[in-house]
Image (cartoon, rainbow, N blue to C red; front, top):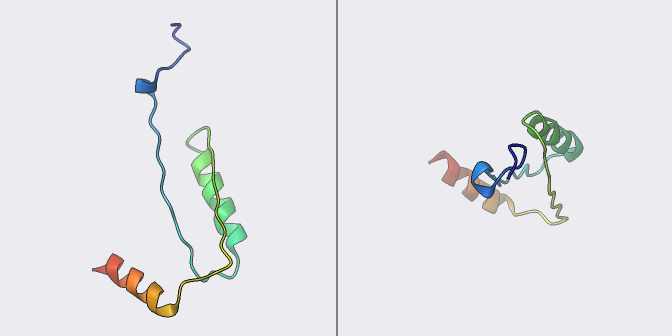
Length: 68
């Protein structure tokens, strides 16, 4: 193997999710996320959009769990 080749041991992958609920304009959030990730190097982004939203009660429960 040449020095320009990398092995699986040399690479690290990361996956995380951010859910910007009830935002009027998601385009700016998606663009900002891509630009921030790209500063660290080669980037692949997968975006899932949903037309349904959780109820106010579900959002409050999630936020409460985070704040505890």
